[in-house]
Image 1 (tube, rainbow, N blue to C red):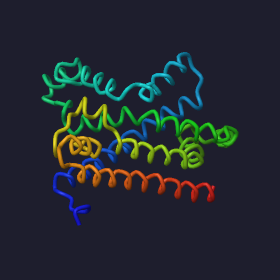
Image 2: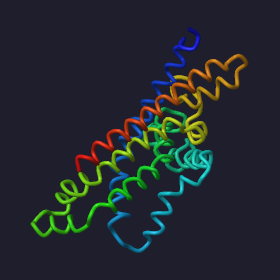
Image 3: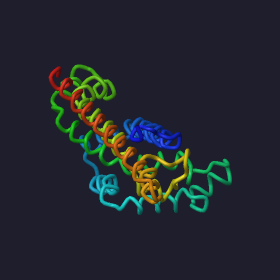
Length: 230
């Protein structure tokens, strides 16, 4: 059937999307846990600024994010130029540009989910653990993380799902290079621009919907099991 007749180029886009989304979710998670805990548990000057800065990508147009990344990490950007001249490392218009763009766009969602989860952990339990001799790290990993795990896991899945759908920042900063940076949304866009590409666009759109749906349903199912056990 033509509906399931995927070409190698289409399979590349699907595989690349899954790879980018997985790396994005894995890299984002530990950083988001640290930032989420800081915002949930600590009071300090400038906290409002940090919170606003972290949430900024939620309200910025993705193309703006891509442009800023290009200005900073492009071959003429102050970081990108330094990396290119001293380490021969190029980020813009590479696979890692797609990863970085996805991390920036999805990071606020992960932090928000983790922050709420940590805020819901009874602080008295953490205080009791500290009273019994547990240090800050032990308290964090034996009390805070296990109790907040459903929210942490939700943040991980949200990051994965959001990365699967990232378009604007990716096409601006990473380009639309087949086999290197062309993820599912970009492949769908390219197919829509070609006469007769409607079936390709439909096929890839269905894959995108199925992957995102599976991620969200799997997250909800595991969350319910974890909540029942806790």
